[in-house]
Amino acid sequence: TLGDFKVQELPLPPDFVWGTATAAYQIEGGAFQDGKGKSIWDNFSHSVPSRTNGEHADVACDHYNHMPQDVDLMSSYGVDVYRFSIAWTRLIPLGGREDPVNETGIAFYNDLIDRLVSVNIKPVVTLYHWDLPQSLHERYGGFLNSEEFQADFVRFSRLCFSRFGDRVKKWITFNEPYIISVFGYHSGVLAPGRSTLSGGDSKTEPWRVGHSIILAHAAATHAYALDFQPSQKGSISIVLNGHYYEPYDTHSEADRAAAQRRMDFYFGWFGDPIFLGKDYPPAMRAQLADRLPQFTAEELSFIRRSAPTNSFYGMNHYTTKYARALPEPPADDDWTGNVEELPTNSEGTEIGPVSGMSWLRVAPKGFQSLLKWVWDRYHLPIVVTENGCPCPGESTMSLEQVVNDEFRVKYFGLYLDAISRAVYDDGVTVEGYYAWSLMDNYEWSAGYGPRFGLTHVDYTTLVRTPKNSAFYLKQSFQRRRKDGLDKESLE
Ligand code: PNW
Image 1 (cartoon, rainbow, N blue to C red):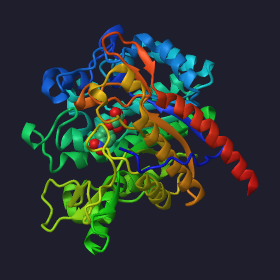
Image 2 (cartoon, rainbow, N blue to C red; image 1 turned 135 degrees about the vertical axis):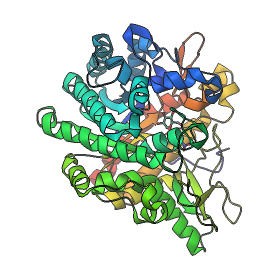
Image 3 (cartoon, rainbow, N blue to C red; image 1 turned 90 degrees about the horizontal axis):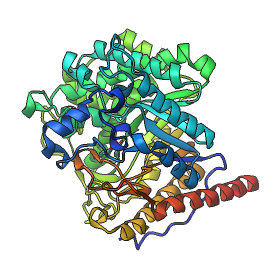
Image 4 (cartoon, rainbow, N blue to C red; image 1 turned 120 degrees about the vertical axis):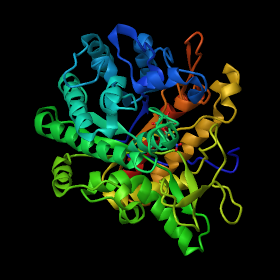
């Protein structure tokens, strides 16, 4: 339980924004409606159902057919922004730069954006949240063919900027390149499900995929900065996920180094090239040698030149772990920096109570530390683009119990207090907070089990029911921003 924790409702700046986040495949349904093409997730969830708890997202929350109602719901929560992703395969069913555009798909997102704007909610758009067109994967190996992928991704991005950029002022190129690379190409638990066991190469493919994401990100932001930003005046960045790591044994030099190295492998992998225009972190070079692709001098200088103005660091964050140095040399397919991750430290203390998913424990102090770690390293305003949790036992509870989501209310309260401390005690700039998620949805390989929503979704009737946490966030932001005002005027 969370009995030992107390929420303090600490203040936040008056201009701090809050909202909710979703992703197309997790909520939309309408998987083959109105000319939508097949993505690697349509393929992954159907071809071997055991990989996704026997479940697919052909219908999911059927947001594609309930969209106006979902916008009204958000409006009733009082959100300032809504982060959603665009399904590439709705806009270009076959995905490629020569392939035809599907105007019906464009019309859906135009309608969504117009409705958001009409109720004063700012749209924040993720271009890629894991749903690569299946045909690009089949034609040339998707991310494994960096040049082809980059050209197709830039074409798709330009289409979005030109059709939606008059109203969309915040863009995210990729959601969580770390998860795409490691879970898609090392363990293969997410689409496209590649690993050494299934015809891939877990030693090299994750690093090649990461490399091509970095270059495609740079190419898309370059296109935006050059051809769209001057007139549209928006901002664009990427969203990186990651845990914070505390040393397993604080007295062990090796464990302290392991915690930092683990974060180099998590955040530095993408953050150093993208935000600093530098090579991968030295710890990664040292361990991975030539398994890690090289940047040419031109590529690094292109990345630097493509860094857009008024950018931000998009942070998806859920939990903290302990890091313990492993005694043996790393395996060739290690991606962790040779670090063991544990929920309990050398003194037997748990990092925090477990939520409805085993990897996600409540540890708000680690969140505060990570905000400072990222700020110190990249000096960019931070937007928390995802944060949230499923409550313990929620997947088997009655509607009445699910709606009374005390655990989630407390999780949000504690994590918002952590932001306040980062802002006022540590001097970190944090601009906004997007709760994951607007509603219960398809949780990838875990199917419909875990419920991360502020809104309960009955997957049979598709009825939406707000949970207490939705009203908590609405009221909490009113209180905290008012107090933030007082606090600032006192100073
Ligand atoms: C994020 N982990 O993924 C995604 O962006 C969402 O689509 C997803 O629903 C959400 O978090 C909740 O899981 C993650 O194991 C998946 O560390 C797994 C991890 C982290 C993030």
